[in-house]
Length: 362
Image (cartoon, rainbow, N blue to C red; front, side, top):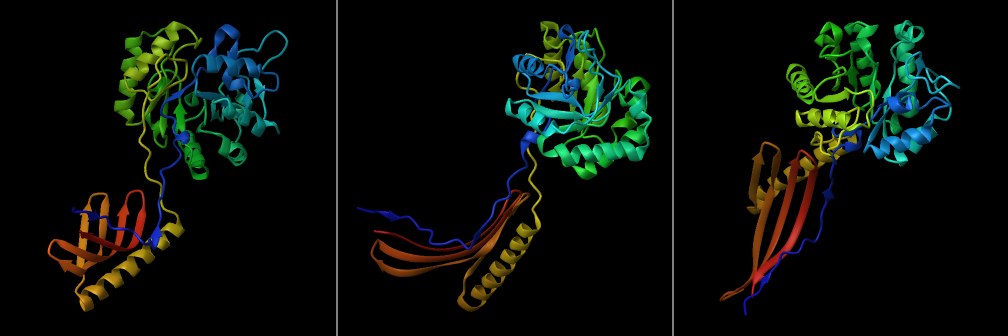
């Protein structure tokens, strides 16, 4: 009987893997219902102390939502919460970390909208004051937030240079995605594409009373003109109706990667996670691995006739040295001893291996 002995790995010097980034921070596939006019709810005002938080959470989950849009401050914008109180004034509160924990626990990932419209007391503040608020919110809440939008309908009150500066500031203090939202239409009422210059996403407001075909055309245009992923974020005042869901479905079918006023279909945009950048420790270990394996390979090749090996593609490189020693051979029976040193690099990991093994036929 002939039996092949499988080589046995006896040791590995170093084996490191760098995983891709947490896709929870991507807005691809996001699903929100931030306008619920029938209940006089706008989830942006969820963090107001008097908001019907349980009602909003339950309604959002019932509509299939995965994300929830929240204001970090407000000075006038929004549906009134009812005859007894007004939700249009919001200031940061000490319990917001706990509030966001509750949302994440029920499967609603917060997207923080940092500036409201219809709030002159806020938007007229200095650039330093705006940046200070952004920084405070990121410092406090970044670990509990999926993404940011610096302003709702930014072009109502700020020029493109101001918005770009605020987006750049956000991106300097967080690695979460940042989207830009303007008034209705691509580039807002001014048709100014410069507003999107620093953005990761376009939060497209299509306006009301559009047909599914019109929504699809606007999404396709936004993708083609900006080259950015598009969230169809504002197309229906009541997100829980079949008509609103049909509009959201049309946006997804046209290539949108998320919706803000409800939809029926689950798939809506997919983003393959990019490889994570290696940290300093991984880089140092990788360099040491290259040095050790390289020197050992050269020495063994020069002095002991080891074979040098190299293999490479666009995203894979492997090099090292190996040699097989014949320990025993008689007829068809043989026993070999193998030694291999290899350094492998791909987009996702560095790996250095010292291998000793036996193989043969009996």
